Structure formats: C-alpha cells, structure tokens
Image (cartoon, rainbow over all chains, first blue to last red; front, side, top):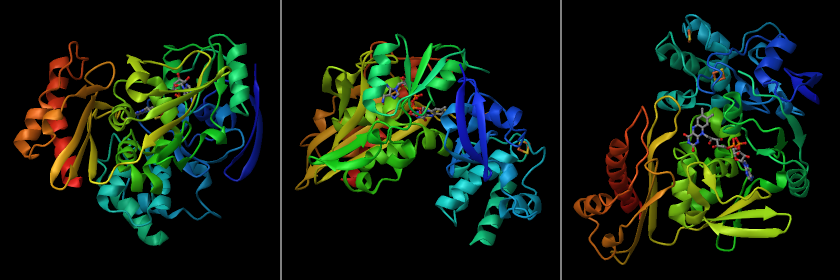
Length: 155
Length: 282
Ligand SMILES: Cc1cc2nc3c(=O)[nH]c(=O)nc-3n(C[C@H](O)[C@H](O)[C@H](O)COP(=O)(O)OP(=O)(O)OC[C@H]3O[C@@H](n4cnc5c(N)ncnc54)[C@H](O)[C@@H]3O)c2cc1C
Ligand code: FES
Ligand code: FES
C-alpha cells in the first residue's frame, strides 16, 4: 500500500507516493535529498531531526510522512533568504555555536520555534526551549550565546 | 529503524474512525504518534492497520463546560500548557503538561494519547486522578464516561474498549481557596517522570478543609495517598511530611534507573514538596 501526500517543503509544493511506514525524516533526506535534518538517535531523544511542521518544532523521526500530508514543512535548507543567512545561522557562526555541526540544524529550528514564541528569552528559557536537542560537542554555552545574538538581531 | 509494514487509514470524523475500528480487527488509533511510533519502531507494536485520527478537529480544543473545563482528546500538551482557560480554572493541569518531555514532544503529543497509552511515567494521569477528572469514551453503541481513578487499570492498560475512542476529558474547576501543584523528578534523558507528585490543598477561613495527593511512577497506576490527617490541621511542614510519608504500594515499580524502594522514597519527598507548594498557593 502507498499513500498519496501533498505538502509544501520550504515554500515549494511537493507531491509523492509513500509507504505508510515511511518516516518523515527519511522522506526528506532520501526522497527529497534534503539532508539537513540529521538522524542522531532514531529514538525521539536527540532532536537532530527537528524540523518545523506548520511552524511547530517537531522531531521528524517520530512522524510518518503520511501524517505530514497537507502541512507546510521547513527544514534548515529553507531558512536562508536570497543567499543571506538567517540571523540564527549567523549567530551560530559568529558565536561559535557548533563544533561538529551534527546537532546544529535541529538546534537552529528549535531555537527558531522558541524565538517565535518568546522573542527575548532569558538564558534559562533558552536552555529549557532547547531541552529536546542534545549536543555532544559544545557544552551548550555558545549555543545559548548564538540564540541570544539572533534574538537581538531579530527584534 | 522502521516500523513493520501496515496499512494507513485517515479518519475524517469520529464516526468514520469508529467504523474503521469495527472493520479492521487489531487496528490501532494514532493521535500524535509519540508513544505509538516509538513502540512500532521497536516492533513492540505491529498493528496491521493504523487509523490516523490526528486531524479530527472535533476532538481538539479547550472550552468551559458545566462549571469545569473540557479538554478534547486531541489537544496537544503545548496547547494545554498555554491555555488561558486552564490557567484561570485549573492551572495544575497546564503546569503538568508544560513539564512533559520537551517542546517538540509537547507539539505532537495529545492528552488522549497520553492517558490511553498509560505509561507509568506519564505526567497527566496522576494530575487527572487528583482532580477527579472524568474521561469520555465513544463507541458505535453510544457514549459513556469513567472517573480517572477507575480509568487506569494496570501497566499500559486502561478502560478504553477495543471499539472505543476517547473523545474528551472533563476537569472540575479548582474551587475557591484551593491550591494545587505538580512536581516531577524526571529521567534525565527521556524527560519522563521517574516519580511525579500531584497535590492539592483547600484552605477556608484559615483551616484546611480538603487535601489530596496522588503519586505517579511508583505503581502501575497512579497511587493515591491518604492525606486526610491534614484536614483541620495546621498544615505545618511537619504535618505535611507525616501525611506524605503515608505513600505505600505493595509492589513498587523498579528498573535499571530507579529501584522500587528508591521510587517510594522519592515519592514521599516529592509528595511533601508538592503538598507544601499547594499549601503556599491556596
Ligand atoms: C522523547 C519523548 C519524551 C516524552 N516525555 C514524556 C513526559 O515527560 N511525560 C509524559 O507524560 N509523556 C511523555 N512522552 C509521551 C508523550 O506525552 C506522548 O505524546 C503521549 O504519551 C502519547 O500521545 P500521542 O498523542 O502521541 O498518542 P499516540 O502515540 O498516537 O497513541 C498512544 C496510544 O493511545 C491510543 N490512542 C491515542 N489517541 C486515542 C484516542 N483518542 N482514543 C483511544 N485511544 C487513543 C493509541 O491507539 C495508542 O495505543 C514522551 C514521548 C517521547 C517520544
Ligand atoms: S533522530 Fe529524531 S530525535 Fe534523534
Ligand atoms: S556540535 Fe557536535 S553535536 Fe553539537
């Protein structure tokens, strides 16, 4: 059995036939070639696969592609505008918010969702907002700095 | 990690979902999928058919109803945590929902899925039992409701029948002079409660007139603690500690992270803290 899905990915309409068990992260990475959403744990714990679905941060390893039918999906590939990095991408660059970079796409999309909800979060609110995203390298300090940098530029 | 193969049906209405449940034996309903998909990936669940009810708007939302609050089964934890209606009339439910997992989990997980799955580490069951909430179920033969205290039957087992859909939960509004709190000792990786304590205290004219305490994570189902000794008492820290130390389960849950004895100990400590927080809010 396959399911027909129609959705918008980074502003572009996409139509596909998927197996019901196809996870959204595999659909994005393997069918659409959008490899920004990483697979860290596959058990819903690390947040590396975080994307936005209708504006909400979700873990794309814990969603079926079929569940995304009709949704608007944003991945890290969809954040830059006209070649200009998004303030969060710029912040991670400027504040050295990454080392290996594996967690970074998920971190940035979770931070994006956080700043939509709360445009000027405290350090503690940033840490709470990014609780679902694990970083093996940085120790988080510079990630918090990067989000604060972006929050200032976005306000 | 892939789930085993299954057929996918999306229901456009509760009636259609009920019909699909009748038609497909062993089918599973899927709401947010945040308990079911992990189980399917681990092949602990291999339903031949998944009925996606995630889009049934008729089961979403929070409204005032009959002196209480009605929460649709498909309302997400994020919406519960952010609800103005709940903040005004039942803040402890919003508090508990806001402590579930992380932001991403709260954006997908629903109250109906949370209590139908009935994980002993879930945050909402002890709170709903504390509040005396009622759970509403619909089947082809009609609708019925069951008290939250009777809804949870055993580990991952509830009163939801095979042909039933959970439609909503009714929560009584907090009475004047009442304070309530939910505190959890959470697993550092998953965010689930190792132990969660839901407490309420009502104070009228300077006297405690009612008190309740329900602990999650120590037993297969939420464990109510008899704290009636607090009624008429002075609500001192000592009185509260004595009441919370009444937590007792014959066969506490234990796992590699926390033994049964340890959970009971933490349950008493968090019970005491939750009662004290409820007192301070009353
Ligand atoms: C990483 C992670 C961390 C988590 N941390 C916590 C936590 O700290 N605290 C906590 O409480 N929970 C936690 N959860 C669980 C989360 O709250 C789940 O979302 C919830 O338990 C299930 O809700 P769902 O809508 O996703 O249900 P689903 O996964 O879709 O369904 C779960 C079960 O309920 C049944 N079901 C769903 N809806 C209905 C309905 N309307 N009628 C009848 N049956 C129904 C399904 O058939 C299935 O058996 C966590 C989950 C993850 C992945
Ligand atoms: S890969 Fe999705 S949470 Fe880790
Ligand atoms: S930068 Fe390596 S995991 Fe975060």
